[in-house]
Amino acid sequence: MAELPKEYYGSSAFCLQPGDYLREEANLMQTVDEILEVKGRDVWAVGPGATAYEALEIMADKNVGALMVVEEGRPVGIFSERDYARKVILKGKSSKNTTVGELMTREMVCVNRRSTVSECMALMTARKTRHLPVVEGGRLRGIVSIGDIVGEIISNQDFTIKEMEKYILTGH
Ligand SMILES: NC(=O)c1ccc[n+]([C@@H]2O[C@H](COP(=O)([O-])OP(=O)(O)OC[C@H]3O[C@@H](n4cnc5c(N)ncnc54)[C@H](O)[C@@H]3O)[C@@H](O)[C@H]2O)c1
Image (cartoon, rainbow, N blue to C red):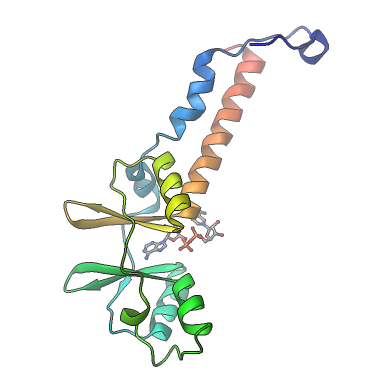
């Protein structure tokens, strides 16, 4: 590591170890299961026959930006605020006469409980999606959103900063 001029650190000089850099990386290895453990595993869903209006009412009531679409107990798609904005409003359709089945995104980008925060971030960016259903053994196990992932990263950074402050102040 390049040495800083003395005026930057005065008498309380410290040297970062390679392990300190790894710590931040390691936090991104946190798993989807750890996020679900805190945020809960319930998934709000709707049938494909529901109207867009009914789906929006549920989304507002539950304060979520997407609903899984489930038919005969199986996830068949996902309906998000983005689907509504682009496929109803911009197309001049009526939300009371258009069903979720017509609007939902059929191709779902899924993760499993062992997927890491880092993997979720990469998937959301590459596939331009804000919600990742968590699937295992063919069954829905939860859902994580971009806010969950960003929140996890921020709280990890906060933890890293506090650890470094502690290290600077106490030396361990
Ligand atoms: N305080 C928190 O922990 C927290 C977590 C996530 C998002 N947010 C905030 O909420 C706003 C929107 O968040 P977003 O863009 O991530 O999307 P969002 O509104 O869809 O997600 C909000 C929360 O609802 C959950 N959720 C979404 N769809 C769900 C469903 N069908 N069933 C069960 N849970 C579902 C998400 O996992 C997330 O925890 C942002 O302002 C964000 O900062 C806060």
